Amino acid sequence: MIVSAVRIILPAALAALLAGPAAASGPAPLAAEGCLGCHGPEGRGASGIAALAGRDRAELVAILTAFRANERPGTIMGRIARGYTDAEIAAVAEHFSRLR
Image (cartoon, rainbow, N blue to C red; front, top):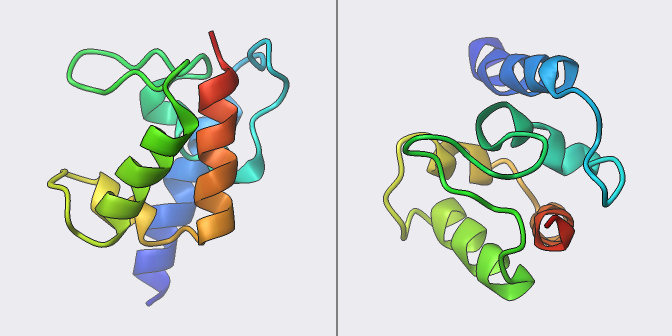
């Protein structure tokens, strides 16, 4: 149980420390801090990692909800999304949809 919590909390904390300056839309909500390590503070992604910036809010909610329900294949995203409430998913989607 403790190991599982560490596997979620440690990457999120590291991402928050390494994220750098906030994007133009303002600071990421706490729920989105864990996304920044892979998707970047501007949501542009990287090789093999999806860009999130500017995507439709409803699309992002649907994608994250599908990951959480294990209806969409992913390496780590299903495990990450299962830790989010509907409200947190909405906050993450809102944040990244506003980035340009």
